[in-house]
Image 1 (tube, rainbow, N blue to C red):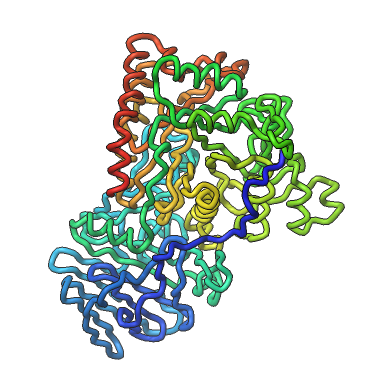
Image 2: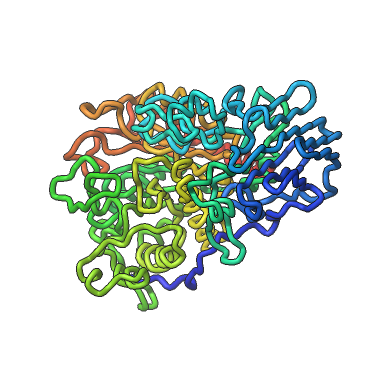
Length: 626
């Protein structure tokens, strides 16, 4: 079952050729040995404070890859004395007034020490809450959320919130960030990123704790501030970007694109009609009960996406009896087959000998190709690499396991910041065990160093020097798919600013309810404020709000598909329903295939999907010209 389609990949972040992370010297102002301002553009200002004078950061970060926008440097004047450093940008009426720190270890940019104005309507004073007036951004996901959450990060851990030392939110959490309510944390939809459009006239991007790409190693590294000052002193550093665009939100969006990277156009098929389901199935069932039905009823289908049911030894999350488990990093036990195994279930997806007789191939993948269907394949990589993987020993040896540990079958932890592990993950597991023809990857959570944990994903992980692993993992998968197929595409959770470079987003296991449907237009459109244009939702809802009943609201499902017709992406998705005997598509009490709905819903839903196909030329043209 070996695939020798591609040469081994040497993992690399692969920065765009247009990336220019070092700002030109004429745009920089050193007010003192600890403080540097950069006039990147007339209304885009970078402000840095470092406790170690040698810690100014010129390398690209996970979020910021370009600080040189080209052309002539923006003219400005500087008045710098022993107390104040004042910078004026005449073309934009931007004025920066910075009062220098009085002594060693002073907190950077405290209230009354930094004021930035843009004309007579926009004023920022250090410590101002960037959530006030902000028009919202987006969340890491909506898994387990019934309805919606605030998109201006109110009551949610905010990626980029720098409160004053006396702020109420700091006293609540002790780390300078407001704590997420328990009901939000339990839904896992609580990592929030603010956008760059604000009625306050200014928006703030905090890049202080992001990892960097070190040109010397072409790999993820700690920022200079964290490396030199250590984690205990990280709070005395700051790397902030001020967007001072008033109500010119389009200009703010363009500036973010220049700074953080443009959003590429996804493959055309990913904008078409997609089907996915959390259920165990076989290749034969998918053909007879799904694709044949779409064909027979004249309904378009572009993507047949496989959730975790394709995995060997798959177990449903609500059925632990008879399932092999191991300890889970976040507590409790984890089901083998749901994650950690990168092998097809050969009883459901049998292999055959290749025509040349040199290896075995997955005929279902070839069948998809022949029918112009693409696939996003769900790879739950947490909480490690099991001994049941065919190439387990190869991975374990590469990671330095002893013979005794290998014989014991010790699980290989997920180390996505370790280059050796990443090389083995892509070359020995995905390439050799899964196969890579026209398969894209559905990267479904599990995006922290040792697999999924219930701790914070953004700020607290970053403050421990652990970077933004969500974005880093997306970055690597996207580059691998781009290498293999010419154009990359993810289906994954949002990882903060920079994620727009690696679409498409997967908003997680959404609760089936009218409240969830009502919230999705707001959620989808507001993501434009972080330049993220492609959310893929579980249209129909992943599961009912209550686990003690099976939902069968066909009107809700039909309305959801009709709404999805006008979304950037359209993907119907359900699970099998709360029915422990329903282990096959045809046995599930939840109807997803539209021709099986009762009338008038069957006709209405079918027509919605057909209309989506008619819209594709317009949607794709819009994507190309945006």
